[in-house]
Amino acid sequence: MLIKKFREFWEKNLIYRVFVKKYKRYFIIGTLSLIAVDIINIFPPLIIKKALDILSKEVSLTKIVILSALYILLSFFQGICRYVWRMYFIGTSFRCDYDLRMAFFGHIETLSEKFFQKYKTGDLMSRATNDMSAVRMAVGPGLLVGLDAIFYFFVIPPIILYLSPKLSFYTFLLMPLIPFIAYKIKDVIDKRFRSVQEQFSRISEKVQENISGIRIVKSFNMSQQEEKTLLKLGKNFMKKNLKLAIPQSLLGPVFEYTTYMGVIILLLIGGRMVIEGVITLGTLVAFQRYISMMVWPMTAVGWSLSLLQRGNASMKRIDEVMNEKPEIISKNNVTYIPHGEIEFRDIHIQYDSNKEWILKGVNLKIPAGQRIAIVGPIGSGKSTLVNLIPRIIPVPDKSLFIGGMDINTIHIKALRKIIGFVPQDTFLFSERVVDNILFGVEDEKSISYSAQKIAQMAVIEKEIQQLPNQFDSYLGERGVNLSGGQKQRITIARALAMHPDIIILDDCLSAVDARVEGAILKNIQKYFAGKTLLVVTHRLPAIRNFDMIVVMENGMIVEKGTHEQLIKINGLYTSLYSKEALEEKLIQ
Picture 1 (cartoon, one colour):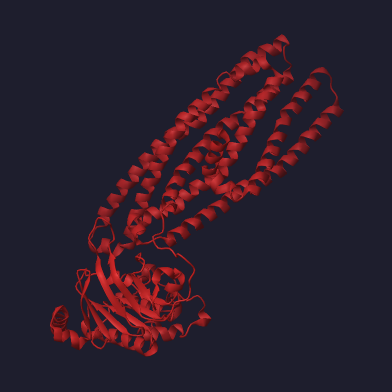
Picture 2 (cartoon, rainbow, N blue to C red):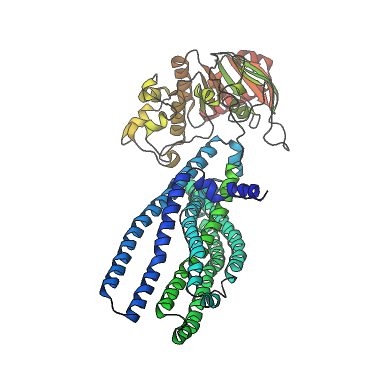
């Protein structure tokens, strides 16, 4: 029973999870080399004791030379072993750091939109940087000095007892205080360090928001106000760090002073014993060396506990993210996607169980190769509907089909490979223009059209040619050096570069004029004939010639048909179209 509990504790332990589980061989080699260093370190005081005892009785140059040579030889082997444990402990800690970062990033990539509504970008950045570093320090230096201290605690006391049991008793009289103090302080460190990390996350969030929204901050003249907010967060962070520094600062000195008190006792009592002839001078010097050696493990225990508590607190924050379950998963490995109609069957969607339904019993068949427009008032569920097709939002089983196949039975990578999706929120990477256009292309040799041709289809090629390095020009963060319309057209080009079977444009032409919008839609019809096109838009004149127009309101489809059919009905579509036509006349 005890063994089982220990095994469960060990498998949950930070050291095992991050280091030992994957790098067991490295851990064993590093531990053995560390033990070798510590064993070698035990002999120098004994050699010095022997030399002093020889010099006290007789002067034998031969024996002194032999002892000196032995001392140098031991130091040489100790240096080799020290190099090995540095490589296998400290070096491997960086490997662990790499593994953990990649696992963290890979896991975040699998999570849905709901997760990113729960965790802010700055908070995630803090966990992916500051907390990762704390874990690395725990499994590297923290583990190393902890093992080193444990070895000394087990080996040096028996040697001291062998040299003089009576003197050992007086010297180690205060040692029982150490575990008691360590136990009391470690929980305080854990709590306060977690508070520090949470505050660091808040600072990261604020800085990230201000950098991303710098135009808004400046345009509303809020720079000084934001500086005051960050100053307040910074002062709070400083106060929390100072509170953390108190228990951390206590560990080392308490342990060291306990050891130094032992040295004072040694000099008072040990000196008297030498005078009385109970022990030799060599024994006293060796004793003093071993007591001095105990200063390091006392300090090491404090440092190790501090690093391990920091690492445990940070690992808890990392685990909070790693324990988040992906809402959208591939239930099997079906990669064959039949080319056919898209069908919604009585689909109901809500983002939160406590909130109202976004989609309410939607039924819709979209024949393959047709051009479909989805229109309606703001908040009617248009974006939610098209977000279901690439499974950006979880889809209930047996409610959405492609070619008669339940979308949940298709491997998600295979599904998204055939879909060119352009969301409302345009996002560009801080890379070259060509890299942004070909972002979704796995093999550039297999693309149907060149980046330049795709840019022509998206009516952005001429503007790209005007950039300093044309297609090799680097963009600023989120494409800050481009206009809204230019960014939208590059994101459209990115979707077209995949040569998808299904093209979804979710209200992503709002920043271009009607002429450019018409040209893009015409190019898609020309170069992607036979492909299914879904367009969510508020500009109704641009979609008059579409095969079918779907009108949504309050999460339901209230009308559908061609432009002419819907005008005859004289319902919501007619009202929206008349309003749009009137606005165009007023603009002209």
